[in-house]
Image 1 (cartoon, rainbow, N blue to C red):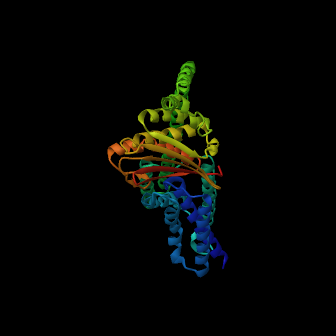
Image 2 (spheres, one colour):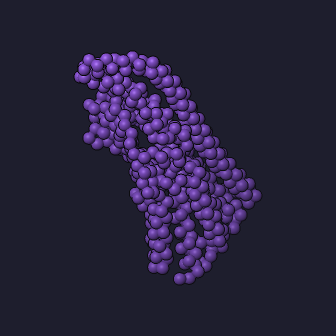
Image 3 (cartoon, rainbow, N blue to C red):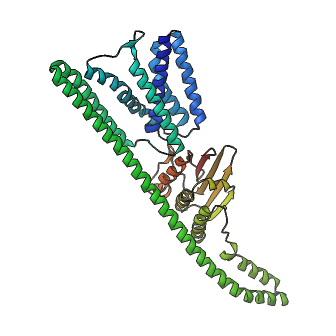
Length: 432
């Protein structure tokens, strides 16, 4: 294997990694696999690149470079159809940042880059540029996962990128045409102006993305904080109401004991049993204010349970909830309030209205499951509710807020509806 073959192989590997990280950072939706699975896929494709270089099978290079994207899509993502089409803008992003500069610089300088070892696709500036992009994108991906930063573009932003790519391609072709028709000095001015114009528009577009993300993050955090404070206020008001009810109950307790004593003396045992049963069934004697042990979760639960009791909905909790302390109180409040609100709405009309919350602590991950009965099965497609407008209202509210919290901790959630039971399962890795 010659030095040229090694450099070509490294260049193809870097192109594959650049495409992959562009895809994961900006375009792939609902990526939910652990980093070990992604690393395994990358190592497999690195081995394939080396095998192709050894076998001198150049015709397989393009397939291998692009092939890693659909494999990651199928293996690690839920929205596979959407992500499959997002391979196109990921490739165009690569062309814009890795290929276009290698054409623009020779157009401006009127001097092409020298080929390394006689390989037309291999130049020293191109190799250095690919290496810099690989390091930059790998670092960006690592930092974004560690700091819970979501850089993924939405549909309108992807459309804006397509528009910019067409504009950049048009300008690049214009530079080639005008270099042949204008005199040397005018063509240099045109090339520099076109390059500056493209760079200015791209920086404006990039600045818009940063500002939009910062604004969305601030808006979401403000909404979550407001929701948390509202829940705390309602919890305090409910606690004060409970205190007053307890005072009244304590005041009446002496009279209740006298009545029970009289029934006992007159041997009215059946009436006494019914009286005690009715007395013990009072809500204030059966309320538990420490259900999960997490203060934020218990505050939300105390409010939602009071509503459920009034509506005749059985709301139960079991399992382990200690791991919730790893989440911020605001995020716990957002998670519980939105999912319980959806469950309280969705359970209406069910034959046996109930809501169950289970906390499951496993060796490498923590799962919390919200399940509730529904009047009819809900259709779920691509991990989202696909049903009538009324049912969307019941089960669609707050899922975006829930998704933002779960993604913040590198987790994922799944929706399922079977035998008229709607289930939301949120899974968090323990290596936060």
